[in-house]
Image 1 (tube, one colour):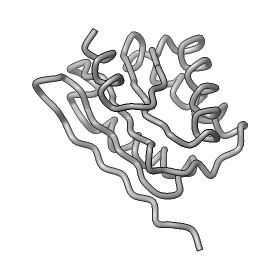
Image 2 (cartoon, helix red, strand yellow):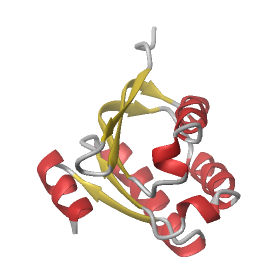
Image 3 (cartoon, one colour):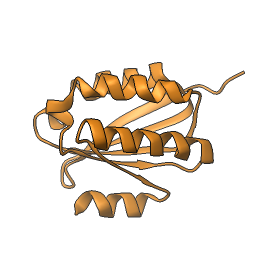
Length: 129
């Protein structure tokens, strides 16, 4: 039986970031639910807050083609995402591979500046630059 998926979104006003943490099994539908909530947040859509995404305790249950679907969806949000930064923390090799694919496509097609990290301090430092 698969582990329960869970996510949280916490606004950090001093750092002007939204901390998005996802644990458990993660599929494209769960990512869609999290993005639906993100898009309701003024800090994300209007105030240009960046995104610190922690997938270090998640396991991606997705195919490579699901990354394409996610990028295509996010392309519709280009006015919100262009020049915004997302630091993604991952630990599992399979998650890293999928995130690297997403990073490349998001940067190239949307102008969404995504970077992959293995530690939270490095991710936060990059977002502050």
